Each structure stands twice: as C-alpha cells, then as structure tokens.
Image (cartoon, rainbow, N blue to C red; front, side, top):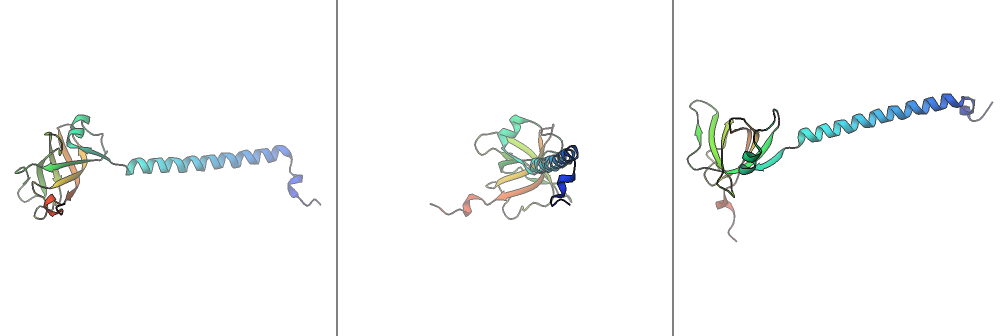
Length: 147
C-alpha cells in the first residue's frame, strides 16, 4: 500500500477536483465582494451645501443625501397639532435658499434659531422641496469661545 493515497487517484480526476475547488472559491470571493460593495453603496450618504443640491437637482428615489445651511429667520412654521415643520435654509456662502419639510421631533426650544447651522438628511424632490428624515443642529456660534 502506498503512503500517499493521492497517488492512486487518476490525474483527470485530480484536475476536475481542483477546478471545482477553484470555481467554488471564486464564487464565494465574488459573493463577498458584491456584499461589501452593496453595503458600502447603501451606507454612503453624499453631503451638499444648499447651492450644490439646487444645482444637482432632485435625488433618485430612495437615495439619501445630507444638506447643510443656516435657518432663515422667521421661516420656521410647525403645523397645528402636528409634527410636520416647514422652514427655509440659506447657503452659508451664497444667497441661495432651500425650502424644507420635516416630519418629526425638532429641538426648537434649544438650538433651532436663526443662528443655527443645520444639517438635514433626506431627499430633494422634483417640487424643489427638501424632505428631511433627520436633523442635526450644530451649536450656534455664541457658544464658541472668542479667540
């Protein structure tokens, strides 16, 4: 009896086995690569200024983007007995404005004022309105120490 049992396996059978293993590994590596690519694409959110989002135009269905701007004084209006709020943002560098709608809780009494820099995450509609799903309000500059 031979010490190495693979010596008893005919060469064409060994080659077929190697091909099957190679194809199996290629399929697994390809599937993992696809999953990583898909996860990265769905997790990435683009960040725009008010001017940039207006230039780009409406976002694709289901695609979320972030937009940064300052609240236009006096533009914040909450509908009666509702969580729907409408307001306008202005670009921090240019005079472009953007109408926005948010359905949800907003920290209006803490930092949501005309000095607030706001980051919205949502989608930009065909009607020129940004539909926000989440809001991040940066602290107003009055809380930053003078240098």
